Image (tube, rainbow, N blue to C red; front, side):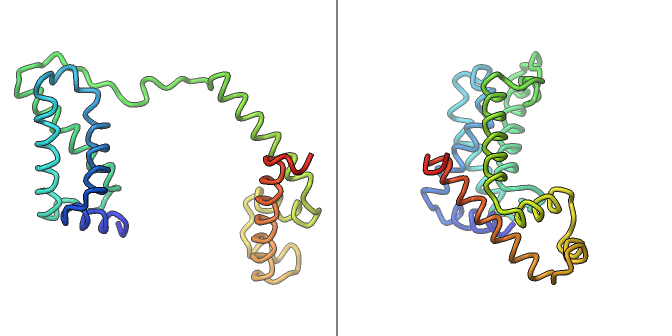
Length: 181
C-alpha cells in the first residue's frame, strides 16, 4: 500500500495530476453505464469523485487491494445504486472477461511466434555457461539448488545469472536494432 498511501495523500492534498489519474479510473469504471445513466452520467461522475475523496479521508480504504481497483469498484457500485434508484431493474451485469476470445487472434499468434523466435535467437547467441544457468532457472531450481549442482557458491550463481540476464538483454536489443543478424 506504500505507493497507494502516497497517491491518497496527494489526492487529498489536491494534486491535479493525481486527481486527473483518478478521474480516468472513474471514467473507465463508469463507461459501461453511460447509456443507461443518460443525463445523470456527468453528475454522477462528479459525485463519485467527491464521495470517494470523503471515503479516503475517513480512512475507509483498507489497502486490501490496489487503490485503482478500489476506485473502480467504488465507481461501479455507485452506478448500480443510481440505476436502482431510478427504478431500472432491466440491467444485466456483464463480466469483464465475457468478451475475451478463447483463442488468440492471428496478430497475437504472429507476435507470439516472433517473440519465441527472438528468444531462441538470443539464447543461441549466449555463451554455453549462460544457457546452462538459464536451463536450471527454467527448471525452477533455486539459487541454493543451482549452487549444489554446480559446486559454486550461491552468491557466485546470483552474480552469473544477473550477468547472463544483462548479456541477454543487450543481445536482444542488438538484434532488434539490426546490429546482429
